[in-house]
Amino acid sequence: MNAKKIYLTKKGLEDLQAEHDALLKKRRPEVVERLSAAREMGDLSENAEYTAAREELAFIDGRLEQLEELLKQAELISDGNHKTQIVDLGSHVVVKIGNKQENFTLVGEWEADPIEKKISHESPLGKALVGKAVGDEIEFEAPAGKMLYKIVSIS
Image 1: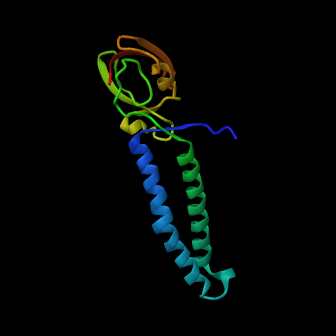
Image 2: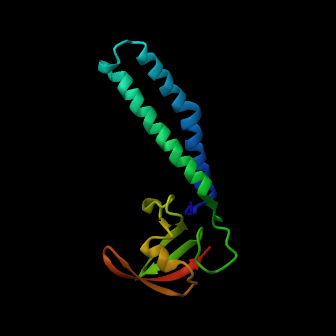
Image 3: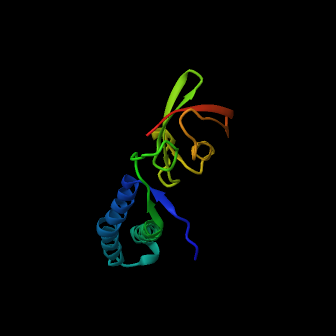
C-alpha cells in the first residue's frame, strides 16, 4: 500500500494524539459501560439506549481507526522555524492584496482552517505560494475569480 503522507505541525500532531487518547481511554470505556448497562435492561429490539450506545461505539471505533491511520502516515513539518526565504509547509506568509495585507500559515490539508488563516499546501492559494520568495507576485484562480498577491514576508 502506497500511503499518502499527512503533513502536520507539532500542534496538529499533538491535537490528533490527544483526540485519539481521549476516545480510547475515556469516551470508549464510557460507551462500553453504557452498552453493557443497556444490554442488562432486557429486550434489545426495543431498547433505544442500547441502539444509541451501539451506534456511538461504532462511530468511536471508526474514528479511532481513522486517527490511527493518520498518525501512522503523519510527517512533522517545521512550524515557523524556517531559515529559508522560500515558501514551504509551515511558513508564515504575509501577502499584499491591493492596499491590504493578509497573513497565512501554510499547513497540511488536515490542519487547514480558513478562519485561522491556515491554508492547505494543496489549495489553489497554497499551490501558488509554495516555492515562491519575498517580492514574488502570484496569480491564482479563487472562487471569486483571478487573484493577484505579492509576497511581503516569509517566516
